[in-house]
Length: 152
Image (cartoon, rainbow, N blue to C red):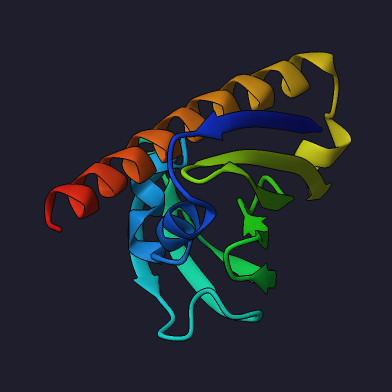
């Protein structure tokens, strides 16, 4: 299991806007090579994001499904990586100021071989992956904040 927290220089609404745009996932989710399709209802519970994970020619086609969504506050997903397994991911957003948000990303394997192989090394790798994912998410959200500010 990995829990990572980062303060992002953007409002919770700006960060959630990135999460609510399924087409951006390959820009910030480490390991996602390509977004193949996004349900029109994304990020409503039950909606799916179809992705490709890993480098070619070893990439895997699978999907992630929203299990819960609170606009501007939280998003929970069941992320598929079959045949390796699936993970539960919860991202929470906590405003800490007018234009800052504390983002916490919790990820844990729920099924498959990755669950059976869970150990401290896997946890460290998952932690490092999610530190980088939140760094990328921050870059996108902070850039969108600056772009929105300059267009006013």
